[in-house]
Length: 138
Image (cartoon, rainbow, N blue to C red; front, side, top):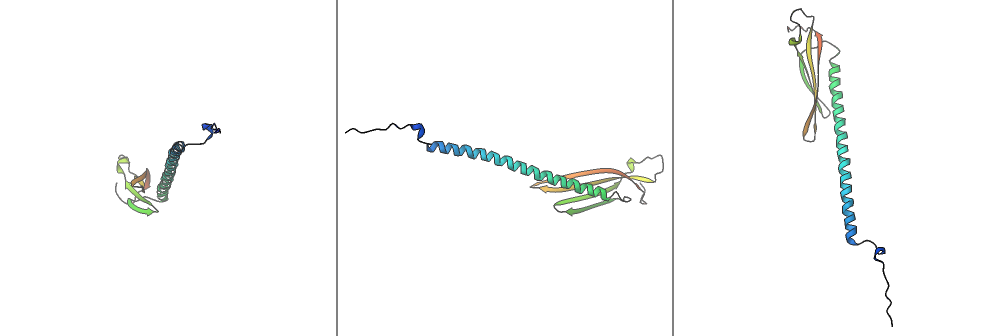
């Protein structure tokens, strides 16, 4: 009796275990890189949103002082996760010394600070405004 042997084409037999493991490793590396890119974009978006909110709070602090005469102050308030410091100082060094003044220069600073993880971030807006005298001598 003759034993029949079949010729099996090895290319049609499927994947080996090593090939499957290599494919999984490559897939894990690619997915890990995509996750890192996504996480970095999300952190940047959150950071940008917090920065925009801080600018809006600082601008609203400057706008609140635009309505009336200025007096030297230094106040701090908390709004959500932000801390806003408003400082108004008389600046006689900006004034003319040759002519009497009916308005005086004031430096207005608004600083908004917040935390991002372990880092503290801050935005500072500053301007100089002229305002009538409050009875103080410059």
